[in-house]
View (cartoon, rainbow, N blue to C red):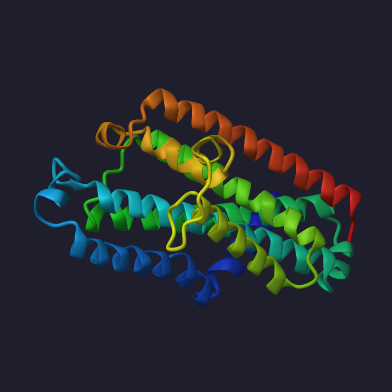
Length: 257
């Protein structure tokens, strides 16, 4: 019951801020729509037809994947900011006065950030599927990727918050990391060339995209990936999530507030 109350508390903090909700829902959808209209200028006629499959638009599919993954990697700022305010800021004195152990608040912050971000990520995918002719692919793969990248991001946010001086710094670092990974994977407006091996197997952003791309036949035909590749990348992503979780635990224990 205590855990449920704590998680509810953090979820309430997230959903009470309309700016945060808009940032994680309307902004990514707006970027996807803008990108869709830009692509329409170039992908017309026979050139564009090769990216259509049974009524699905594979260009829009790629755009939704790219933007969704990018914003989900930013979402660790929630757990990081809550950790900073509640366990390093003035709120820590209030928490110390409660009969609840501090680690339960930490788990509540991670769980609250995870649930809120997963819901917003699901919203972005739903908009893409119902209104932008997105090919969803293997639903189990999509859910697994969303679960792993959001959880990994919360752990990374905690790691950043351990060293940050302000909450603004946490948000800035998480945003910069996400944009940098997207650029290195060639999925953003300013691509940074990286070896394909690094993008596919080392860069979390790239690993996430290749896991998604292996979850549906029309996508695999275009990018040359398969379901076995998807499982491989899911395994790599799971390992990265575990490592980030262990790193967050070690840092929190060794560098107390």
